[in-house]
Length: 91
Image 1 (cartoon, helix red, strand yellow):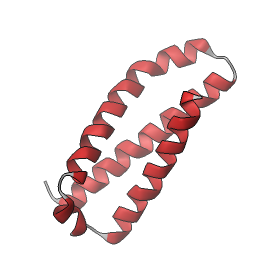
Image 2 (cartoon, one colour; image 1 turned 90 degrees about the horizontal axis):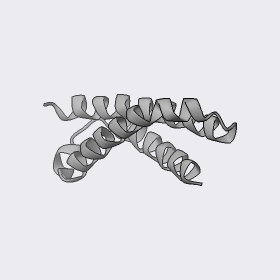
Image 3 (cartoon, one colour; image 1 turned 45 degrees about the vertical axis):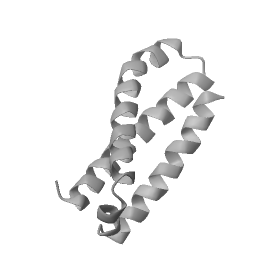
Image 4 (cartoon, one colour; image 1 turned 60 degrees about the horizontal axis):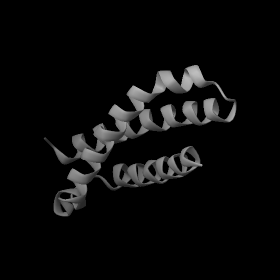
């Protein structure tokens, strides 16, 4: 698969994970247990896909270096946002 395509796929996955974490964090803050329960399976699946795709890119830095700089920057910004939301989620 083309490296830019892989990056675009990971950006889409990361964006979905961000949306889900924001919903879950809101549900946690407002004690909406039913919403939290409903999001668990999707969160687990998205997290696994995110981790696998991110690891795959990290293991191939030469291919990543050839990708579009704007795509890389977008992914970096999204990855920071995911990390912040995961930290909030853990608290």
